[in-house]
Each structure stands twice: as structure tokens, then as C-alpha cells.
Image (tube, helix red, strand yellow):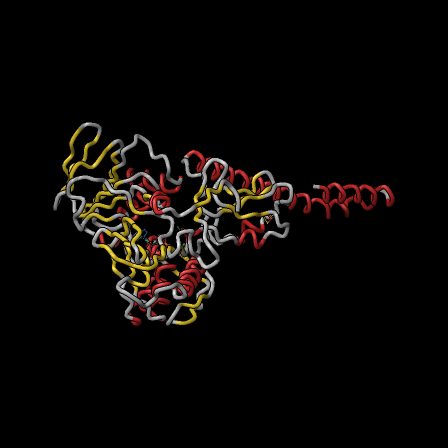
Amino acid sequence: MENLVQYLKDIFYVISINGVDDAPKLLAYFIPLLIAWTTFKRIKAKAQEKNLAVLRAIEAAGIAEPVSLHPVVDFNKCLGCGTCVTACPEGDVLGIVNDKAMLINSAACIGHGACRAACPQNAIALVFGTAKRGVDIPILTPEFESNIPGIFIAGELGGMGLIRNATNQGRQAIDAIIKRPGIGQGPALDVVIVGAGPAGISSSLAALQKRLRFITIEQDTLGGTVAHYPRGKIIMTSPVELPIYGRVNFRETSKEALINLWTDVTAKTNLKIQYQERMENITKHPDGYVVETNKRRYLTRNILLCIGRRGTPRKLDVPGEEQRKVLYSLSDPEQYRGQHVLVVGGGNSALEAAASIADEPDTTVTLSYRSPKFSRAAPKNLDRIKNLELAGRLRVLMESSVKEIRDDSVSVDHKGELLEMENNSVIVCAGGVLPTPLLKRVGIEVETKYGTA
Ligand SMILES: Cc1cc2nc3c(=O)[nH]c(=O)nc-3n(C[C@H](O)[C@H](O)[C@H](O)COP(=O)(O)OP(=O)(O)OC[C@H]3O[C@@H](n4cnc5c(N)ncnc54)[C@H](O)[C@@H]3O)c2cc1C
Ligand code: SF4
């Protein structure tokens, strides 16, 4: 605006010196510029309006509190240049509102930190939690050991997310564990590694390379959080050193390519991971610790927790839930072609799962949610569900709860009426139970962060 005012002043100054003869020439110069300026202002106002709409929708959906590391902008320093907005690999996470950058879609922020690195004004800080919602971060030594000797934490649970950080920390934690007393001696394992996401894979390969006596348990499947990204998700990462395998030179890859790489590496190195095995408790023992899982107990000198922050899926606790057809996440919608599927939950993962299965041919999909209204879902997912429902591709049962799961059917209570439905698969997306109570029970110290680094 200041530039435009100065420009107009210059024009009138020139006219006042040269007389009106030069006025048509100057106006011919001035009018296109004025049009360009007003068009620019209109585009900017429209973009700000769109950003505000995203922000309001995210607030209305109750998902405005960022789950982990996220940026906060110092408005006194911010120039509103938008460099951070374009730097973010996840898209519309930041946006310009009232000429300042703001976190408009906190649910989509995964803590890349590219915004902070890009800001020319040093106006961005990365923090955990907010004034309203504290985030517990375990207190660790630089070697990733907690205050409980022999219990180590690597990856996102320790605060630093991202695939590269988790991979590096998993490897480094094993480097520290081999220096601990008693390694290779007595009946106890050297280490139990819990979780097979990026941190668990890298630490398991490092343990294999160092010939430690170890086991890796995983409640779900290979890849951790990565295995649950939407199909085809582009992953932004940096090259890392994977023990035994060597350097992985990915910068930009897809979810499928990364999972394929890990599958290939585990097969070639003969790394054994015990899937569908969940750690449920840790108790002290004179030789170290006993790790209790849903299958058995392990005596170990050390424990490396690579369990991320998604937690253990919440169960429905209904008869028949133990069947193999009941899953707690969606990996490949195609596998449900020709099936009757019940999806349970009202958050983004439930809505995304129901919509992507309903997009597959010959599926009959029912979405069951206990509340009268979806409260923690992104607007784009709500629109997708509404459109599929209108098109008759999906049935939504609000205020409903699953009563029993049988071989080929399910019973669902819908507002007091018991519905019997044909069923081949059930996908439960009812959120996760975070590991914080277990950590506290074991005595691991955590610091609750309310918007601090
Ligand atoms: C949508 C989305 C997109 C992302 N995009 C990127 C990206 O582009 N680039 C990037 O670098 N990062 C990205 N991230 C972040 C990245 O995925 C995580 O930071 C990373 O996966 C953390 O690795 P981890 O090994 O610490 O934990 P996780 O990957 O979360 O793995 C933990 C594993 O532990 C298992 N587990 C948990 N509890 C137990 C238990 N009690 N017993 C047994 N097993 C257990 C879980 O089942 C899981 O497999 C993204 C995250 C999300 C949600
Ligand atoms: S890059 Fe920095 S100065 Fe530019 S909009 Fe973002 S926070 Fe503001």
C-alpha cells in the first residue's frame, strides 16, 4: 500500500511539473498497474477468507489442539510473507490470516519443522502442547535412557517425531545399551525392543548387527505409524543409515515404497519380529525386568520402548471381538471388495476407512458411532461421508453401539432398536490408549509441556 501511495504521489508530481500534456501517457502506465494491484489484493483477501474458513471448521470439529511438536508464530516478528506456508510439505497446515502466519490446520501438522527453517524473520518456534492441552514428554539422557536404569526410549514417544529422527535414535539407543553391565551374560535377554515402527526397525537391525540377545515385539504390523498413512501418501524425509543395510537415500518417497524397503530388509537380514504381541506390563526383577505381553513373559536386562504416540487401539469389549475379522486399522481398502463391512468410530480414521471402503466396488459399508454428532473429524472427511451416504454407498448409524460380533453377522443397537446385519469384516477406529499411565506406573519421569520447546 505504501508503495502505491508513493507511486501516485510521483505521478501527480510529474504532472504538476510537466503540465497536463503528459497526463494521458502517465495514465496509460498507471491504469494497468492499478488493475494488477487490485487483483492482487482481491486474491489475497480470498486466500485469507479460505484460511479462516479452514481454521473455523477445524475449531468446530474439536481438532484444533496439535497432538505433538508444532509451530507457534511470533506475530511481532512475522511479516506475512508466506514463506513458511509454502515450505510445509504437508500442505495447508499454516496459512496467512490478517497478514500474519497462523497454524490453521493443526490436525495435519506432523512436526516437520520446515516452516521454522524457512522463516527469514526467525518468527517461528516449535513447541509441544498448548496452554489448554499438556503433552507428556519422558525425561531422557542424551543416550535415550530414562530415569529408570536399563529402560530406554527412542522415536516419537521421546518427543522427536519424524522417520529420520526415529531411525537414528533407535540405532543410537542400541549403541548405548551394549555398554550396559551384564550384556551377553546369564539367562536374561540383553534387550526387549517394543514396537516395529522406524525406531523399532532400526534398533532391531542394530541389535542383530551387534549380536545382542533380543526380541522385538509389535502389537500390529511392520512400519508403525507409516503403515497407517493413507494409500500413496508422499513421505518427506532425509537420508539415513539403516544398520546392516547401509545408507537409505530417500528424500521424497511413498508409503508403499518405504514399507517395501523395510519388508525387503527384514527378509534379507532374517530379522524376526513377533507380530500381534502387545506389551502390557513391566515389573522389576533382580536380573533386570520382566516384560509381560498378551502372549508371555520375558526376562530382560534392558527394555527399549519404540512405541510412538498412537497408543494401543481401544477395544469395544463385546462378545466375538477376538475374531480375526476384527481389525483396528485399515491398510488396504481393496481387500474388502465384495464384502459387508462395519466400521466403528467417529474420528478421522473411522471416516477415512469407511469412505475408502465404500469407494471400492461391491462393498456394503455401515459406519456406527455412539454419539449423535461427529465431533472430532475434519470437514473434508465429513463432506466425503455425507456425499457417499447421499449416493447410497454408505449407511451411517449415529447413536449406535455394537453388541455382538458373530462369524457372518453383527448386532448393533441403534437408538434402542437391535439391528442384525450381514458382516464379513469389522474395523474398529475408536482411538488409542496412550502409554503414559504405564510409563508413570513403571516410575518413568515425564515433563508435561504446555506450549514450550
Ligand atoms: C499422517 C502422518 C504423516 C506423516 N508423514 C511423515 C513424513 O512425511 N515424514 C516423516 O519423517 N514423518 C512423518 N510422520 C511422522 C512419522 O510417521 C512418525 O514420527 C514415526 O513413524 C515415529 O516412529 P516411531 O518408531 O517412534 O513410532 P511409530 O511409527 O508410531 O511406531 C510405534 C510402533 O509401536 C507399536 N506399539 C505401540 N504400543 C505397543 C505395545 N504396547 N506393544 C507392542 N507394540 C506397541 C505400534 O503398533 C507401532 O507399530 C507422519 C505422521 C503421520 C500421522
Ligand atoms: S515465513 Fe516467517 S515471516 Fe514469513 S509468514 Fe511465515 S512466520 Fe511470518
